[in-house]
Image 1 (cartoon, rainbow, N blue to C red):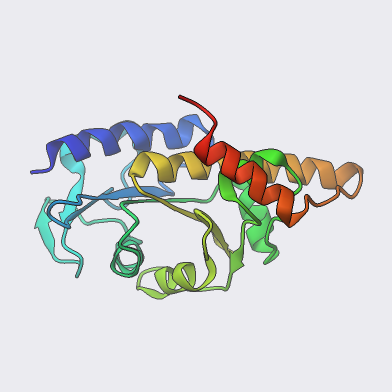
Image 2 (spheres, rainbow, N blue to C red):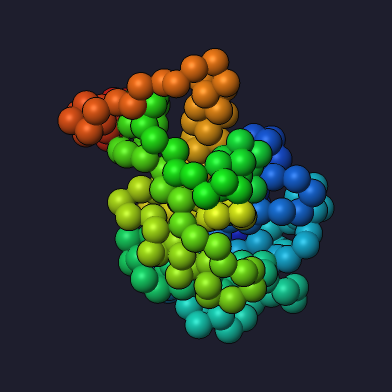
Length: 213
């Protein structure tokens, strides 16, 4: 079931190591099927080069396995918590990408120093509190801290991104790491100026309503 979503998730997961967002088996992406409400997510502990579409696990919003012979990701409960509280979200990505996680380790949000961040995120990338892995606690922190951003850092942990699709969530994860790396470099040579809120709003509007085809 949901074969097209499984195929898409397989391809999107291959982008995680290609984009240097994960190491070994860390990180995951999930997608919610808007028609059925079911969620497809990566199985736990499978290396990306070994992952196949048929390995994906289908669960309902309460975490019951609907299809799949492997254990779902250890982050499944938190993904499902986010889906239950954000009906606009149909894709979630979780990474431990290096530069963004460095900010998370320090409990630091990323202010808007870059037009690229204003474009994609429309404001600072917030940082939520600390939560243990395995239950809904991380999902609760995501919902509490993310606001209107498509991305949030989790203290001492990593990055969660959301979107109207799994591809959009992955794009946000790629952009988080690019922004974090550039901001980190900028902070090594000086103190960059923040972009004003009014200009951030203008940049974000242009990017979301004018830019592209």
